[in-house]
Length: 359
Ligand code: NAD
Ligand code: UGA
Image (cartoon, rainbow, N blue to C red; front, side, top):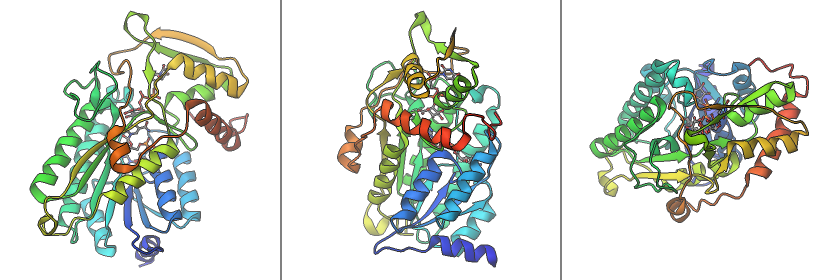
């Protein structure tokens, strides 16, 4: 009963025409930011997260407290738990689902492939089944990944470009997610929007990602390992700041419409959309390190090695004209500015002595 009350309160809508959104992965980096943004403008938000230990669970718990202080309740549970999902859909009529729960990370897929199948494939299907049965059906926005472009060398990447050469199992599960969601759209009329995020960074970020782990190591005086691609070419990423990604997510929810609970028949075919959310300005990994050094005022000890395995793609670069046109998406934060904001957050959260840092 207490649980139900917390869920209902959290789902309360405080603006005219507002949405009631289930945010999966709300304890995560992107999920916590999106939940806060929605709550702040008066939408109802309920989070779901299994708080797994892929990275520092205390950081996830800290995000949970932050959300709790702002009126967002996160249910602790797995997207594979069909009973829990049925209960949630019973308690709240969700107009939208923002599905961000996943096993992220490219290289970890070589260590623990099953965790990707569990969260990114089985978990996605369990969630879609719950949405399919809900009445009315919620519109779904979910995170795919720039990694689906794989070894495609034609840049910048556009949504219709080939995605048949995944370089990692992570990429393969995201590509599979696109096929699975497309099928649910086709058969059951679910409204689906897939977002291909490009290497997202910022405050409250993921400790497993390069910009975060480099910051930690540089401050601790430890060497960082910089991977270099084939023929000694630097790897490059279209690093995208979290606030820009949040705007793209919210814009996607706002334009996703609502499914109707009758297979979309009342409103014509339910939409199936895919968008790149990137920055359109790739930067090499050594340049990322240079910027961090300047912000931290500490020299990095560089250890440059050939890329281990073949999981990393050489470069990413988004063409965002479709998102610009349809969602009004326009990234405004360059890497220098965004990393400054990250470093400021990092130092205020961990301090220089890294008391809270466990990784
Ligand atoms: P994150 O790991 O910080 O967040 C994911 C959250 O989902 C975590 O809190 C985790 O505990 C939770 N989770 C994982 N499996 C779950 C399950 N089975 N049930 C319930 N909760 C589960 O990652 P993020 O960077 O916030 O990424 C969010 C989404 O965006 C993911 O789908 C990721 O694949 C995708 N993505 C991220 C990036 C990026 O650069 N951050 C880029 C492309 C795509
Ligand atoms: C990131 C996220 O981790 C994925 O979850 C996401 O799906 C992906 O973006 C995406 O855009 O779709 P990645 O770009 O590999 O993946 O991000 P990082 O792990 O932060 O790596 C960034 C770059 O730094 C890569 O070129 C990587 O090879 C390099 N790197 C990473 C190093 O040089 N050294 C390291 O120790 C770690």
